[in-house]
Image (cartoon, rainbow, N blue to C red; front, side):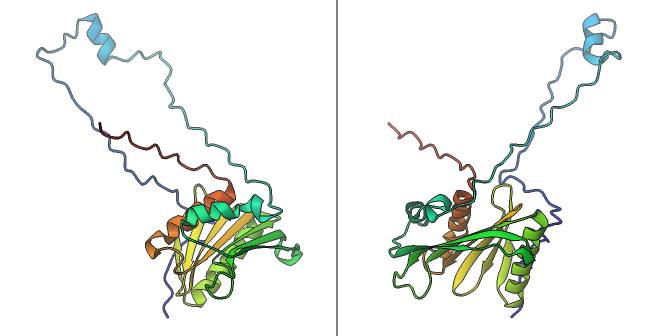
Length: 230
């Protein structure tokens, strides 16, 4: 099967995410009925900048510092079960499981937590939704593991495409049975896997991104309901 990819190596990061809404600037020129008198002092102020004036520098926006939440010690601290059910917006009975893995110095991993949601709910083996968070000793160690994951997915014939999550790079990996979102958050990586059939395919990436936002402690947009027509 031909591998489909649209990604870049995490450590290169050559692109900047653009807003979904394009901003168009419209310049309007107003005509004058009479020509400006070059002898008029007001004309001199309008058309002859003061050569002694210091140039004005545009203020650079200050990026908002993002702080990852503390490494979770249970699933309630990662993403509570009730929040998973709310985001998925579908019945998801079954148990929630928690697994903590020790450090792996050989790959630079310091800790790993995996939470399974909807385990034993009659949807086959494994959880309906699984969230795994890893901490590494450096950005480079984390990015190396992401590369291994993406390469392995491609080698298996899975589809890999870019899907940023807030300020972080992310990739969606999909096959016939499940869809996953892998996120590069510096020294922390996040992998969210959801079985196919839990939600409509058109909603899968939205659900995964929302769960990642919850797990990474990113701010979410507030939707203000419209006023009803009187």
